[in-house]
Amino acid sequence: MAPSIAPSDNVVLSSTEKDSSLADRNTFATRVAGKGADPEKKALFASVTKRIDYTPKIGTELHGIKLTELTEQQAEELAAFIAERGVDLDRKEHVKLGQRWGPLHVHPLVPHDQESPELIVLDSRLSPPGRYNTNNSWHSDVSFEPYPSSFSILKFEEIPEAGGDTIWSNGYQLYDNLSQPIKTLLEGLTATHTSDIFRVFQANTGRKTFGKLNDSIHPVIRTNPVTGWKSVFTNSVFTREINGLSPTESKWILEYLNDLTSKLATYDYHGQYTVI
Image 1 (cartoon, helix red, strand yellow):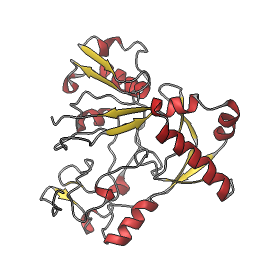
Image 2 (cartoon, one colour):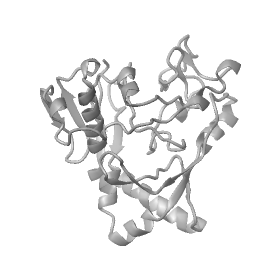
Image 3 (cartoon, helix red, strand yellow):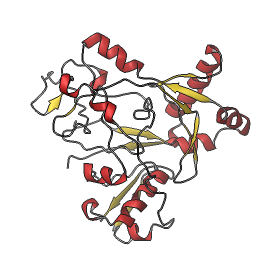
Image 4 (cartoon, helix red, strand yellow):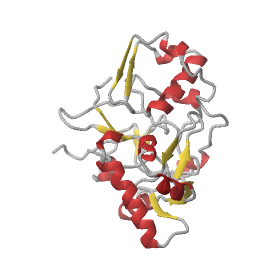
């Protein structure tokens, strides 16, 4: 087992007076990245030398494109492609690309890089140890925020010799496979997403937040503004309840959707990584 480590000079674990409201300055994009893309993505694929589709519905790796040299049209088409395929693994993702698509999110509790607070640090060796330094649960990133992120960008500094995969689940396909009566029911519902899991961690550790821990209401079925495709938008980590239903009804529906997410492998893509 790797030893726990104290925070290094460039990892901020807990807020101080000067950054206690850092996450409260999060803003939302004024435009939808990818909505103006060419449906055929000719500009993007003109630079692609190799494409690997890991599953029929989700998970693609592109080779040949240099993210630092993308034209505005190529960046727009890449955003649309990610919206369709769910994830793009070019393995050279970075902050500047995310900034082209909109403002970057600062997490209200997870440790972050000192110079770039938009970069959260997930390290199983950080002290105190616990699941909040890693993650092994199905979730949609920051769904507790009023405006959840459109994209998540991962970069790996150190990985284990085996394991450590990240698994994505395809909410589009999950929705498509539901029966029409269930679709009709869910499309009229909203759910409350909360930061409760972080409140518990804060109470147990005394760690100070970088801003308000939000709770938000979102549709159970969302429509992606880029693709027009519908997707299930609940998860086992942040979704507390479906509004307007009895606790028993809410629990049954959430457990049913969570069970579909975790057990139907046809929806999933397992990401394996190299350090870049």
